[in-house]
Image (tube, rainbow, N blue to C red; front, side, top):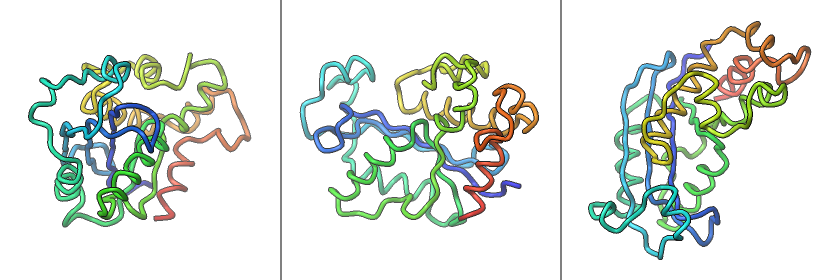
Amino acid sequence: MITQDHIFIDLETSGFDLDAHEILEIGAIRTDSKGNILASYSDKIQPTKDVDEQAARVNGYTKEAWASAVPLATALETMRKVLVEGRDDKVVVVAHFADFDRGFLRVACEKASIKSPFEGRAWICTGQLVWPLAFSGLLKSRKLSSLCDYFGIVNNAPHTATGDVTATAEVYWAIMRRSIPALKAESMIHDSKYGGMVESVTRIISGL
């Protein structure tokens, strides 16, 4: 049984290279173990380098839209205070294609010489959780938009941190609310390590 709070996070960045690109926007939500929202945080981040034109087209970056953006170190500290400080230490972090977000957060914290608000916490990737559905052909892809289509979730602001983190949280709780037998039937995978998504998540969280 899952009892831990969850922190969902989404980052918009100026590109895909951890060394060359930066975080432009952070969106995060903390829920209890049933998906009820306890706290949320979002901010646009001041870039220190030129933003790639293609990335800007995707996430909507303009100097005007980012006029009130804050320094990255300020954003990370505010996020920690809002989502982590004074709360139960046992929390799991969830992101879509989590390695991307986790990597950018790690590098950002190292450059700012600050401790990551999620250091030492378990991470869950919604993109990995739906491998059974993708493997069986029920999902066209593991992109967040495909998951939203499959679970009937509307993302009102795609490619923004606020819109994508909200969609990720809704997708995750949609997965978790499905029964294990239904998930196994959907994925058409039996006696497989991918067969029980809820079981897999419970194993990850139980290690906290």
